[in-house]
Image 1 (tube, rainbow, N blue to C red):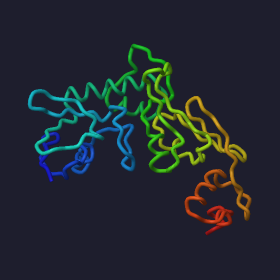
Image 2: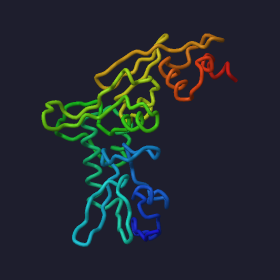
Image 3: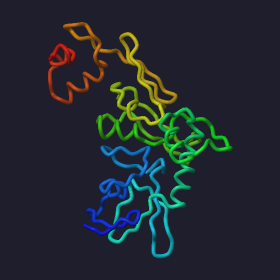
Image 4: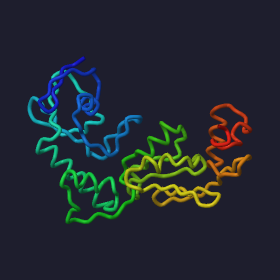
Length: 239
């Protein structure tokens, strides 16, 4: 255990715990956008920025992926932290002004749509979809392509439709509605920024209801090592 100070509150936390987790353990709220406790933190959105006092100068860090250490002093709502957080929200808001989650954060922290203009981008590169597909679903159908030598395109996400099982976990986790999933007739339509694909739904052999994408059922059967006959019924008919 190490002794830490967050917002003038002194307490102990396990060494290696992130600032965000330590703060939440004692009821101190730090806002997040790209964070999910079931996934590896990325520190991509900078909404959880806090100020850490150092021996020479204070430093702004993302709370979700910065570990605590003995004697660390953290201010979650210092003027510098609040200004940086507001700027991050405004930058994101400039790209996705119609996002309900961003609008809520903006109202909470007094952020306004900035005077400058950015190209509207559905995806804010928070990587929640990438991490969810890889870590929670175990498919890795979505990848982040970063800028680098030899690449003229800006950073973006790409989808491997051969791997995608249309589970819609990415649409559920996306904070800006850049990813959508819609069931229409006997297909599920997945839209991820500039990509779009349709997946055939499976029909229950007993009641005839459409209950899941066929690719998702195939994936579940293979992962569980079960025969496809085990997945011929919807949840209602299995009960």
